[in-house]
Image: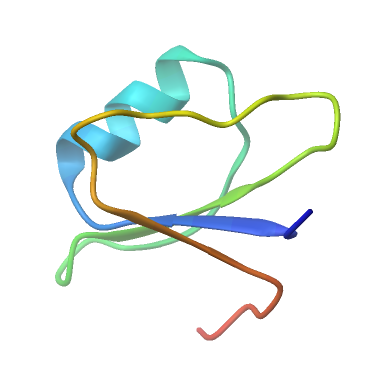
Length: 58
């Protein structure tokens, strides 16, 4: 399991917030949002550009 979920759109951010994922960091100008990927939550988000990572880059 990876530690972070990066989403690259406002729609993706809103979808994860609606699913009660924890928003850790954001870059509003670039529309990049980082969420905590917890082990007890299954991640699946069709139609949303995202990347899973173990690295926090900003």
